[in-house]
Image 1 (cartoon, rainbow, N blue to C red):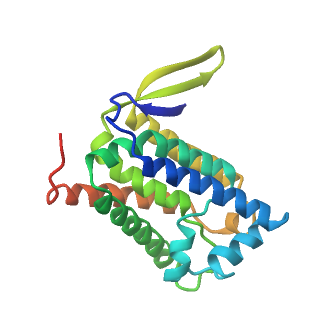
Image 2: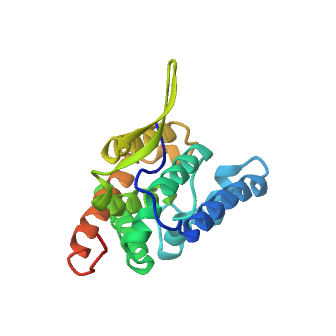
Amino acid sequence: MLPLRATESVKKFPKGILVFIVFLIALQIFTYIAAHGNHSDFILSLALNGEGFLGLKNFFKALLLHENFFSLWISCVYLWSFAPRLFERRPFWSIIPEAVLATACSASFYYAYHGVGIHAYLLLGQVFISALLGVAMKGEIWSTVNTLVIGPKILQVFEVPSYVLLFFWFFYIMLGNLFMSVPFSEAPTIYFLPLVAFLVGFLLELATEKFIKTPA
């Protein structure tokens, strides 16, 4: 299943989302071209300075990078499908800080759980999108999305509940993790990161909606 767009469409597609998606794709292509066949080492030097632990500077750079094109593709598909209604419903300035905070909490919990001595290389692009999805799902969990269903003798668009696509989101993350290269694939319990980011994003949105009036 691949989400296409919300059944209840937006009045005007936010151009910022399209720009962000194009930027992520262009950045990913750049990392492969500039790497000259050694993509993992190039990302480490570009985003993490060869360090495992995420300092503040490394954290913000890691938010923009995906380890492979499969993970990036899934992130872009879900951004395209769920972000427009989120940004129509809520102001930009209140959404991004929530997603960044949820991602930071996820990374902090990860290192706290594994101990300060862990030397794990983390890219947080998909974790950040998972946090955005958590924020979006607070208002979209019971809505439907026009979805391309692919299977034996079937290739058709159906209206699928958002919560079903949420399960597929985590399934696709699991598949993407299988394609990860060393040293990123050696990070323990890496599935922990997007899951916690989603939950924290959802809870932050639950708390925030009590203080920010949003249109119905």
